[in-house]
Length: 293
Image (tube, rainbow, N blue to C red; front, top):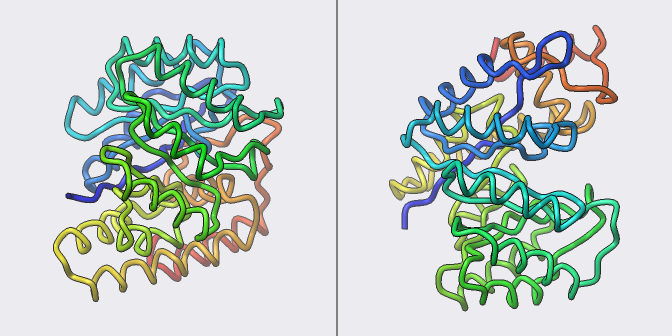
């Protein structure tokens, strides 16, 4: 099976914090040209700062710009099942390739509650649903046995693991080995190659916003069976990640690194981390080190 890379696309903003759809379309083209698929309205896309209507229009713009050339997954997850279902229905109508559902945040959930939540969304739409686990941000974690239960649902196609723990990723991969049609996508950028080599269907990367060619290079090499080249590209990706994320919160650092390459992407909506000159100088130094002027 051909492995696939998705980029968790940034959402571009104007100076007044309205969405810059034109610039966002340009970022879509940049990723498509590199050979990457698109995930929109995710963590790196500032989804928690977007309104319901903006998420719908953003998805329409991205799908239109892609024009069927690559796959598009969009995140519908919200704290309440009610709003998640409403968003999922809109994305189903638009015609995306997959609907990711991040675990509810702020509201503490039991595992039974998560099963009801995800099953209700998956029952509502015909588009395949992907579980999205990122417990550091939501405080709710999809236990591997819960993923195994949900994998039996006819319209739950897989999981995006952004937990960062190799042990959890291994447990999700065990579910995928046991249940046909259930796919695992790795979120942590330092585990891209390891995950692919151990059965993941692909990855969904935030760092790929800043290094689309390197991300695509890892996947191209893996699919070609060129282990040495895949390891070389992964080493670049992992080293860049280490240096960049040492400066602060990962999505904010990715957005700023991209901004310093192309200011049309804008800053993030407040109260996101404000940039400063000292930090920008350090990011520029890292970009020069990795030949990303």
